[in-house]
Length: 364
Image (cartoon, rainbow, N blue to C red; front, side):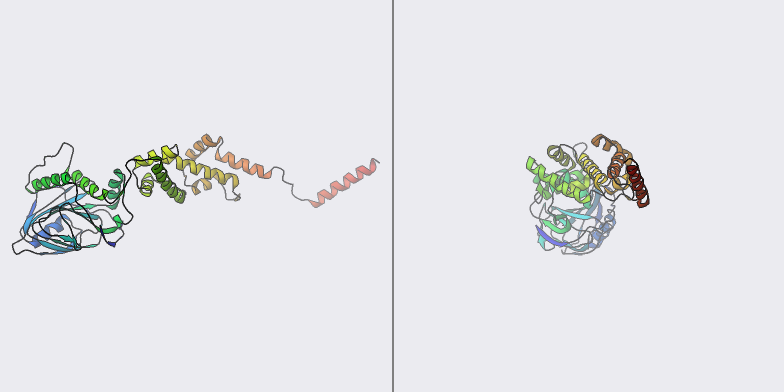
């Protein structure tokens, strides 16, 4: 795996590309560039022909809610240089590379996959009739797809310009190659009912990533404990703020299903139950032991530990501790006043002392 310059993903919406339509044909490198700009308006790149014969071929765009895909089939060779997306991660999947081709001077063959960061420049050379797919996908969607298969990418993998080693699954690539060829000919796809080319391409991409990710497949008690440990570290660091399951899954590098299984196995409760119980115990401890008498109220303490629904808090608190949080607070304040000495009144004390002395003398 070759790793290039690291770059952070900007928080901008994904690029919207045209839905699947008829193939768009070109007869020169300028026409190719024009069609690509229409299909992928976020691109800012330049191209040049590498072959003596006129460059020609076709471009088509398709995809769904998860990804947008542009397919280019070309007779002849060319090179491109520049930004391929301003908002999304771009995955370039080599479908049918006829000759030596490279991205960032790294060789890429059939089934090879390149990952390009938003706003990062790509330097690619395609020779001898290349066919490839350009896949636009948001960072969040890519992470969600990896998590569905319990894949945890290395920390820098999704933050870098990368050419992944190894070829994609041969069966997947044969199906993709056949389907893309039919689409460029304007023919219908022969796919199973309910299946799409988008799913087929995503499956191939995930298979490529799986070779470079930690895989949590056969979970054991030890691995469950590690997952819960990662999640608890995140919870402890963010307990005073809202915590979503997506955030916990990302911190633990597992899917929601695996996260739930791990918590039930190790803690005997779901992640949501664990977080709520932790917050309730933090609230009770502060109500009982805090010295901030003037500022401490149930509302202030609850919000400090990330609970804003006071009605739900009261019911759950009484279920767990046998009393309402307001009762805990009143009882604590009562304990602090029991046995306390009354305010010091020297004149009254002197008068009582004199009366006691006079009564004692009179009784002698």
